[in-house]
Length: 295
Image: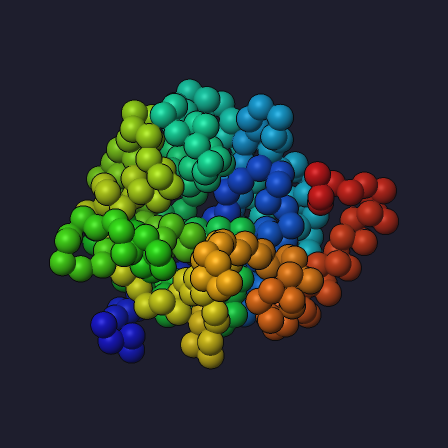
């Protein structure tokens, strides 16, 4: 695959639309991920957050979304944050067969995006543990007219899961450029929700997307680097890694965990973002007399 020639650009339409999903527990990651976008994006940002409450886990609050939007507007007055609570929508059509897997139901919220009329047709979904390192305009504005999704191969899953036995085709769902118009036309997410409701799966939403999407494009690794970032990396995704010395074990480090970034991964490049993140937390505590960012 020639990375220099794979992306056919569409005419730029102005704003960049970014989607995150989760409950109140993602606030730390959401904050640092959005700050990384601010460092690398010139266009206005429309940040959409799909959230819900389930059991003892609470939705992201409007108070937090407003605080985040105020921070974004300091960079560009056109930046915007839209919070969408789909608790009722989720409960009407839950992923019943996968509701108690190790991958929480909050991972599956992106599969409800086609049911939300306020979302734009072109939107880039990011996991909350994804950091932006470079301008991603070339990827964002690629021609999606005939595609449902564009994403990068899953680092581990590509070896074990295939629709085509003779080639790697299993995408990681942590960075997905989505064409919601096409997804609504094909019914992709509707089929994915039905599959999650009826069939227990490993990594349910990611597995369903890979199984059922017929119009997807594989992008270069630099758009979802799941290991060590290099000079070409655009999005750095902090997924769980396997290490084999002195014994086989997993390592999970998230981008807001400064000490672990330093001692476990030897990563220091996000320190300036984490400095600002700490300032934001202090500001929240002083302004609201609250630690709602953490809760």
